Amino acid sequence: MPILVRWTTDYDCNNKTVWWYVVKDTPFDIVSLKAKRRYEINKGKKNFEVRKIKPSEYIDDLLRIEILAISSWPEKYRPYIEKESFKKSVLKWDKAIVYGGFDRETNELCGYAYLYEYPHHLEFSMLRVNPDSETKGINAAMVAGILEDHNDRLSKEFYINDGARSIRHETAFQDYLEKYFGFRKAYCKLHIVYRFPINIAVKLLYPFRKMIKNNGKLGNLVCSVLKMEEFKRACQ
Picture (cartoon, rainbow, N blue to C red):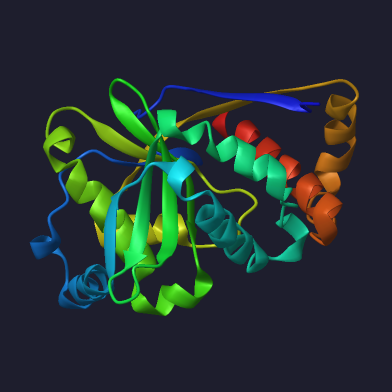
């Protein structure tokens, strides 16, 4: 059951706010990057081939990657994977855009990206990789491959969206996209309406938000909601 409704206004406004989406709306040009970043991306491209796939043909491989990727997350926000439900959901992915990252030596699928397609943009839904492949540059190869595949569209008022500012995940992936691939922040304003009695709980707990421990799945969820409430109030 949903506990809140969240939406944004003033998307990509000129004012710097505390809420944003991370987007790429210019062609990807690896030549313009610093030498170290070019090296990391080229290393990934050397080790992995990135191409569109038909997900229903890789169900077991996608499940394997999902389990490996999720197992490396902190337990406090690590979701439970129901294998049969995941396999059934993959059968519906053929209507979306899915990229696979294949090891050039073994041809093993080591990562995948699932994107929603809209008239004027693509939106990352999931990017999962085998943690053992990260040192070989799988993430860089995946992102670079997707951007290069859409470079023509990125020069024609089209953009790729990695979603809103991260709340729960303790990663710097969006910073990585900005630094290595030229993504930018599209600033906007955050609005939230809570279901009763969640609205009362938020009002009571908000003054004590810095005292609440971010431990366990419940603690992480509560801290995430209160952090969003902080951003919402700042936008007002």
